[in-house]
Length: 216
Image 1 (spheres, rainbow, N blue to C red):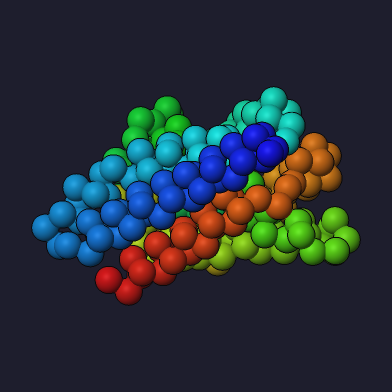
Image 2: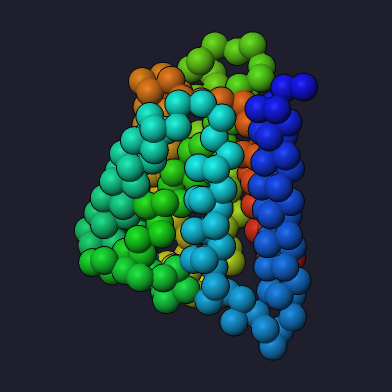
């Protein structure tokens, strides 16, 4: 018996079950008006859990992967600093309180969130025989799609607020540009993109989660 293979399979099942349980509890909590504010205030913990799960779910090159996540955190966090303080990126916006501790008015969890989205979006296309640059562009589109789902509920959840409550098209342009850069480094420079069921499940669960929040 290949005990290492059995271990990897069991770990994968546990990580996927954890994702499903936590996000299901989250959407149930958000669907109860009296509890919505409380569950929204725990959102940064859910993102921390998601970040931990992509580290635990990684199958290869773990140290190199961690190095990329640090790089991704720096790029994403600096981009948000520029956006919040200059409006040069994304548009005119500011962060609320439900994404946890801030540094210079930007939640630290946002840097981790950029890493999460890069990794889970890239995973979905790795099993297909496509040119690397096509995979990078498609993964970038998936990242922007997730932002598209998050934007309408961000205000209600006290994540971030746009000036005059208007989500500018420029936000999505900047999201595409920064996501494309990060996907390029992840897939082409670092050569870290891998097909991973844990990552795939997390992506689809996040899509379902924010789609439901838009309906509730």
